[in-house]
Length: 282
Image (tube, rainbow, N blue to C red; front, top):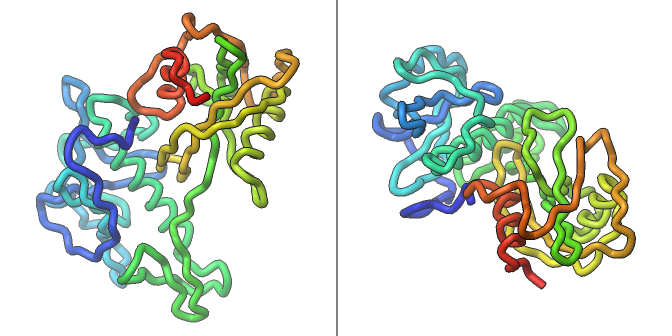
């Protein structure tokens, strides 16, 4: 999946560091990231030394935030609007899901997750005082009331509903992503993950499920989520009652005739492959 590195490892322990000119700098602008796409479709992020950061305006705040070390290289987040960077351009990060440079894609998604959190918590939600960056852990602190704000990570489920040798596949309604997917949704307050599975399946396709079993998790930083994958069995009637506000379609597909394949990136596609191979948890 996206977070499975081809070599080395992700070292995401918090630290306060000053960047060197050859460290990687991730510049986020809404849903876009500064990146270079080569002729072979591989992706490259700029270094600190390559980006013109002369537009920094918040002189009372450090412009660089250390994110993590990946495969021996330090990654930093630029906290403002980046200037010119020859041969690099801002691209929609949702278009960057690809195997060839999946480490770059993973870094971009994680940086975007932090960028949104920093941007959304510049002021204390309790008293309105400007927050400051803590120097001991990844946290924003209110110097007036002591409110501690940690990165927001939203739990969500990916659900593979099975009926013997059949798997339920769906497509989202009103989204640019038009490929086949599994049932998915966020966990509500006061709800277990298993209850989320049952509720989301009932809400989106009107089906009851049983024998809910956990498979695997995946961080999905572009939406600030941690996804948790579950398999479950149909319980009773297989008639689909579609919630058309959420889904464009939902269909049963046989194990040996699935229209979606593993992309090496997403938990959803891996779960589809595992079912196709008959290796889903029982």
